[in-house]
Length: 182
Image (cartoon, rainbow, N blue to C red; front, side, top):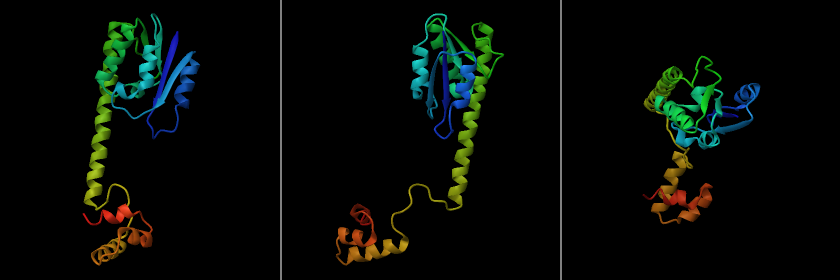
């Protein structure tokens, strides 16, 4: 039996393209998910797909870099599938013949490339955040109070007004005002 797996990150639009590719090769059961995960543990549908495999079944993966994020992930998937007596077929890497020892070895290479790409993405994102901080970009939620509202609230607090009264006039929760004391 052919069992399929498709994944996109939460920011991606849909798995439709991958589902179409899996349907085109006659996959009967498809596990799909939107998940941002650096390891297999963060992808419960992949785990379910592997658990559903029986002897001589084939796990059909639409896109290898969607299933694995590192060389170790790739090896783990192959070992888990092999332990069930099944094999892996990767649609976007047709040159991979996974049931053979050579195919398993070749599979380690794109897994290493996926890991390298993940590291480069993380590095670029970190560099972007660092550059933004240097430009004065503030991260996190927007403040509930403007600087002017904050200074007025602090003045009122020092003159003895209650947090609830100030909050009501400012249009925020009393807890927002109470945090100004600290």
